[in-house]
Length: 281
Image (tube, rainbow, N blue to C red; front, side):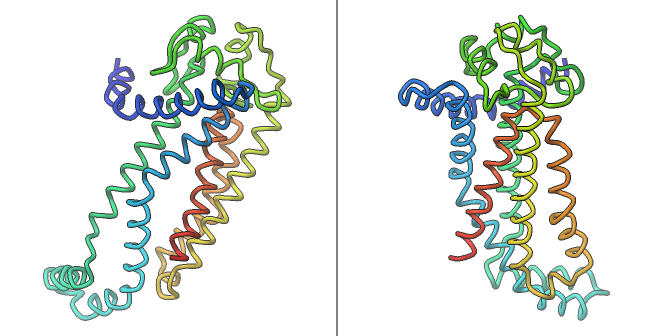
């Protein structure tokens, strides 16, 4: 019951994301006449690109805000040294400095919140094509029921098309390890996934996601001022960004559906290009 309520609460995210994915799938499959596997894969890639393009302005504003905060860090540190014992005076001086430079810290929170909703929505919609898995967040549907149940704006025919779609011999809804690795969800449609093919593709996509995550972290850290990079908090966070986050992507890859891994790689690739573009400007 609680799971159903949570899903209903976030339908305002799931349905628009389904709609964007539906449009791209129609264009690639019906208009371009591509094979199901490649049409669904490109639909996922362009779904991510569409969402990131829509979020470009708030995300770029957030990045610029972060750069301004770094540039002002020496002045913030000076205020802390001067008024550190008087918290009320320190807070007033900080607000005054931020106002002088047109900085609104709360403005950086909204883009993060919107991105979180959007990307959790993409993750959920893609994973909901295969609802046969058991455990947290799964519906434990039978293979027959899953193949004959719509997924938001996608009809039963679309669900079956997605489950039948393969990328280099691996179904997009399959995972290398875990509940979604069971072949029953695909066998009902006459598709028998080869476990080595799924594992190999998951490994390749996981490595790609980890590498781009690491490169993105290096690009971001390179833009930090020496004072910012030397602070204890930044040192810890930078190490997490450089090594823990990429390692996490690599470890999680075997447990994720191929479609979700395509989404992760596409999202990280866009981040890399966007960082270079915004920083260059």
